[in-house]
Every structure is written in C-alpha cells, then in structure tokens.
Image (cartoon, rainbow, N blue to C red; front, top):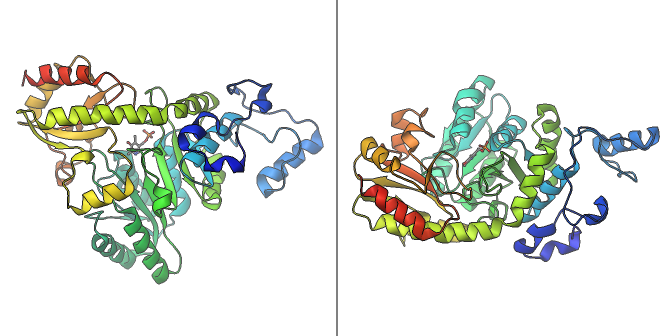
Length: 418
Ligand SMILES: *Cc1c(COP(=O)(O)O)cnc(C)c1O
C-alpha cells in the first residue's frame, strides 16, 4: 500500500500502512528502525548516481537511495509519506520539533525588509520568533485583531504593506489556549489580493496542531503550507518531540533542502514511534473528543466555574461558529475554562487533582491541566495575555483517553476544595 492509486482510500485505512513497503525490509510486517547515520554504496558509480539523484533531482539509481541520515533516512521517508497523505499534500517535511518546523518556514521564506502577518494569539515559541528574533533580521510582524473577519485581515495586510512586502501569513487556528478561530479561506483571498499588489504571493501557513490531520485539512481550505507540532496529537503519548510541514513539492522541497543545513531532521527512532502513533490517531482523536465533550459539559454546569471556552459551545449565529462548522470536523479535546476567583482558587483546585496531571503540553493519552498565566504564558507580558483572554482564573485542559467518569469525578472533588 504505497502507490499513487491508493490515494482514494480513507485516512483511517491509509494511516495503517501508507508509506511502508514490507518488500523493502525482508517482508517484515512492521517497519524496522534504521538506526544508522550513514549508508554504504554498492560501488563508486552508485555513489555518484545517488548524489546526482539527491542534488540534481535525477532519476534514482537501482539500490539504496540514501546517503547520510541528516539528508534523509528510511524512517523519515515513511513518516513524511504518511503525514503528506493525511494532510492531502504532495509532500511533507518532518523536523525534530514543532518549533524547528515553524522557524524553518520563517527562515526559508522571509527576507530582510519583508513583513509577516500573523493571527492572535500565537503559540509562545512562534511569538518569540516573531517578536524576539525576526526583527533582528529586519523582518517585521503584524498581528491581526480578528481572524474571522476578512476586513480585519485586509486592514492588517494594508498596514504590513506600508512597511514592506508580505512574505508570510502565519495563521494558527484554533489558537492556543483560547480556541480563537481564523477563517483560512478568507486569509487566502486577502493573500491573493496582496499578491496582485506586491507582484508575488505571500505563503499562507496554518498551524494545525490543536486539531491535527483527522479533524482539519488547511490545504483544502486554501493554505499553502500546513504545519503541525507532531509532539501533540500525532505523537499522542507524550514521549517524543517532532514537527511537520505539508504542502506542494516545490515549497516543501525548499524546506527539506535547508533542513539539511539546519540539521533539524527527525531521528530514526522518533520517526518510527511517530509512524506507529499515526495508526491510532483517528481512534484517539474520536475518544478524546467525546471525553472532552463530557468534561466541558460538566464544567459548564458547575457553580464554581465562570465560563468554558470549548469550540463545541461556540454560540450559534456568530461568525466564529460559521467558520468552525465550515473548517473543522470535530471540536477537538483541548480547551480552556475560567474558575470563579483567581490564582489562589485555581491553585487550590489544581493541587487537589489525582487523575488529571499538572503539566504543559497537550494531545497525549493522559489528561493534562495547567494554569497558563503562570506556566505556558509566564513570559508573556500581562497586558498581552489579558488582551487574548488569558486571566489569572484561566485553566487549560487537554483531555485524554481515560474513562470520562473518572475525569469528571476528579474535577468534581477538586472543585469542592475551592
Ligand atoms: C506545542 C506547539 C507548538 C510547538 O511544537 P513543539 O513540538 O513543542 O516544538 C507549536 N504550535 C502549537 C499550537 C503548539 O501547541
């Protein structure tokens, strides 16, 4: 199951075997881990032909196409093929973390004097690149006020264009930890209008980490690149870090070529773990989503909870609800809520939890909870985090695969202490 003709199969089927051919490994039903840093050529002519194929895109010779594991290795190839097919992409590049993927997009496609348009809020590391690092390289960031408003996207694009050509639209939808939605199709239309004015098209990149390939397909909505922190739902067991970028072969090719020099490819063992994690991704997303609905419903009705920011509860008739229904196949399983009170009340509840674990990160098999203001957003100035709705009463929960009754009972006894 690795040929072009299998492309019409469902993602649930593709994720079981796509990208691995048992005939390539003595018939092993499951792929071996190729723990090697380098590959032995058959002879000198083969060595030359392999390099010609890699660097000049010439036809691959008979025998192994591999050179050195920083350039490419079999487990990386498999995981990239599988991610690409799930994201409906021509190709994918897999990196050693989500941030390695995000920084590669920025460093490969933005040049001094250019600008980047981004939605708000953005992941902390993305924010750090946009405001801490890129200005030193002469690249200026511009934040969009309201990602579901085409007018707001266009207004920010106009501001950015006054400063310089727009290299990138960095979108994150739904955003961390507020669940703010971005209308990806509207961003595409604005990017096309920008292209007509500046003479080249900005690259529209979407951070799809919060939902992942089973729940949202940004490339089908008009994005050029789909970036995913594979550390989260795709890895799914909180035991590896990885990041992926899917898209057309020419743009992914640029990322892969530079990755050789950045040295940020994913290692063989993590690639192997990730490949097997993909097999259960659909199942895990389904169970986590139904658990999350149970937990969110419990919290919404609890006297000590002020509000719940769960995508499934977006009010009918709002622009965000309409975009959510158009773009997302489910509400995911990471959301935030506000407890009545502030830091003291939040801490009292957190310290009573027995089943839910107190940690940052999300998308693992275990349920994790954190207090963003003092952890994930510790380094974000108070006015910037309050602007995006992260108060001292905000808690973020990533619902896992435990029995929902145990999660609800644990939260219930912890809230009783507040
Ligand atoms: C975790 C995360 C990242 C960064 O991924 P790493 O694998 O930790 O480098 C980027 N975006 C979002 C939305 C994330 O949650």
